[in-house]
Length: 127
Image (cartoon, rainbow, N blue to C red; front, side):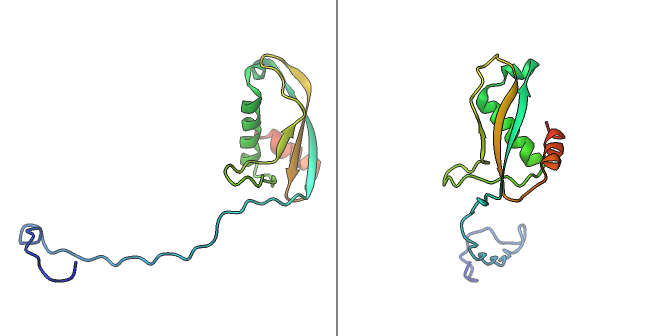
């Protein structure tokens, strides 16, 4: 709006006057997101997959652990993938759907050194 009336019919006694809002400034570009890829500690945990968890597939099981780690606010190292950033957690072998086990192995990398007992307590509280 240049301040001059173009006789468009929008302004008037019924509608009031047009008010020009101040355009907010564009914020400075802070750079692209860069995940924390520091590798300070590697923990190997043993877990079991029993009863109804036997019907959870391998990828879904990894998602369960990802969400539990996020809820527990544990300092997990992230992958450097440019498209899909994920926590660096690895399992030894995928268990077939429907199979149970009490000795599955998972490796989790952390960005900070942490007491394993404290890590276990925080993770178990979310599972």
